[in-house]
Length: 298
Image (cartoon, rainbow, N blue to C red; front, top):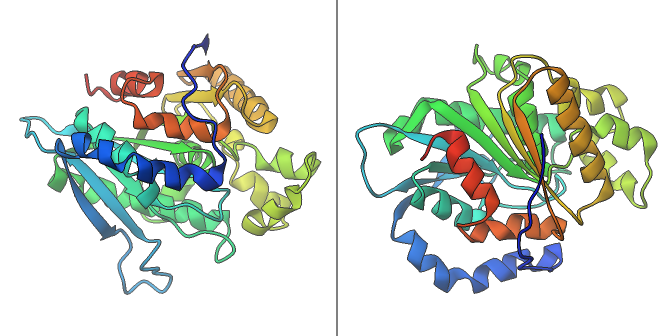
């Protein structure tokens, strides 16, 4: 189902200014931080593992201060950054907003290019979800209601977690724990098609995170893992985002429809790529309103 939603455009800033803009909002952040507790820099990979990275294999948990008799839904957020940059520390406001609204939020880091390629990033994200399944009850979260969310490259990884059960089988998890996905201006839904065509200037740079093997491009593209039984998804696309995101999101939605997977795609008119993430500072945007219903927080 397609939806067109009108939402005010708050930010038109380049990617390089996103961190600065978030810092400028820190004073406002106090009002939302008092409703939640953050547990920072929790390792989700055992330090004795040969690939352990003390900076990238960590996550933050944001839990509501108010205790409830029943466990709360959980959202694991995966940051974007073209597979070569980004940090959980930029997205504290998403953790705070979700916790204030009754969701236990897990904001993760994962290894980046050029140190690793996308298959290793996807493995990191799966291990973060595995940790969440095992430990989120300690923070008031429901291990049986884990949802994944991401922006840009992070949304592509979230979609891969939701569609590729093999990612979890490889780490000894028999059943995919992901109950649904929220994809915010997702990149990387079909990198096999994207890298085969190389339509846009500078596309060669994506061969660093994706490598040069077309079989790998396909294996980490969620488009080719969609099948009946995949969990439901919410997809949000900026009206002025990159053409490749617009087209691949539409095709991904159609593929989900063909397989009978419940999903909705919503276009936010006027929104460019970075403001699609920046808008999440405000609690009343359409993504949060839909998300709370989607995960059963309200």
